[in-house]
Amino acid sequence: LGVKQLIVGVNKMDSSEPPYSESRYEEIKKEVSSYIKKIGYNPAAVAFVPISGWHGDNMLEPSSNMPWFKGWKFERKDGKADGKTLIEALDAILPPSRPTDKALRLPLQDVYKIGGIGTVPVGRVETGILKPGMVVVFAPANITTEVKSVEMHHEALTEAVPGDNVGFNVKNVSVKELRRGYVAGDTKVSPPRGAADFTAQVIVLNHPGQIANGYTPVLDCHTAHIACKFAEIKEKVDRRSGKTTEENPKFIKSGDAAIVILVPSKPLCVESSRN
Image (cartoon, rainbow, N blue to C red; front, side):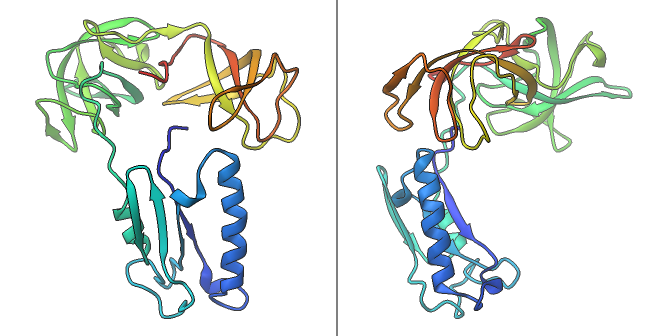
């Protein structure tokens, strides 16, 4: 899912039997480690912290109720870290780089009509930069318009960068023409387009039965929510290495990773993972 860094907080330690039980914590840690390993994470790179959100144990300060807990530690390619509290584990997360050098992509979360201003789409900048005066296109509807102004928390911005949740006023476009799930981009630099079908790597985390060609679940991709059909399961792959383990399987099940061709019920904006 693109989540590179993970912390596991084992909450409600005050409610275990007996309270603050080391054996119960170790049992949960073992079970969760097995699960996250199955879906492609290395447990050695994940901080496990026993906590009580209600009482504050190991949240900001080390808890005297769990003297058996000697602290968390993890090792990643970019270094090691250790500590005793959840706040220290959060502080050890490496902030991602903000991809301002890439083409603008802004999935719409909502669209408002504001009196005296006009149509205001709202969303978070994922990549690129949004500025007043830019000519943007909304895909897959292919609606083009000029950005009049950009605001965040009621303050005007000269530019919005990745991570910013913004509202921006657009010219000559009605609220009815835009909808959640559309993606805004710069008309001049690699504008977004709708895809009639696409190839995806999927991991089946949990499913009661087998998934075969023709299966049509609802896909949530950025802010879009749309039914997509498994047109063809091309191959099963190893979750970690990506190497092919089986060509043209008849079905996939819980725990499997696969390369599949998906066909949305109407065009959907997606990007290749390398972009």
